[in-house]
Amino acid sequence: MNELTWNEFQKVDIRVGTVLSVEAFPQARKPAYIVHVDFGEQIGIKKTSAQITNHYSAEQLVGRQILGVVNFPPKQIGPINSEFLLTGFNDKNGHVVISTVERKVPNGSRLH
Image 1 (spheres, rainbow, N blue to C red):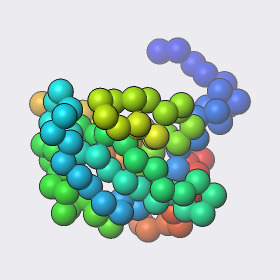
Image 2: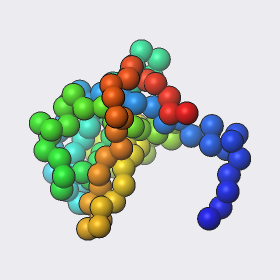
Image 3: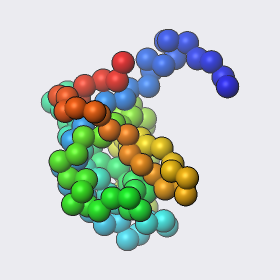
Image 4: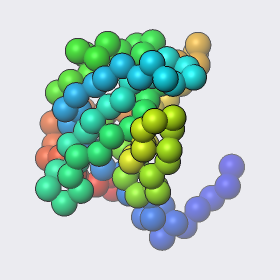
């Protein structure tokens, strides 16, 4: 495992946000949603493509707080411009389980 310095870790801007809406993304190569998340006043609303359809319906995601990396450059994924990375872990079958918070915190709060 490669070690990193505290300064290197601080470069990764991981914030909490609330899922506002979720759309089907039929153009994606693998099943995915387009997820719109409110990261608070400072960052605003951002969207991403997320391959999280195995464990979550669109209805289950709306209103849920998630963790996202907000300082990657935008990435074109088919017809959408992905503006953040929704974080998660693969389960034993390789399906993504999203990272979330234990209790509600203000949108835009940074992971420390």
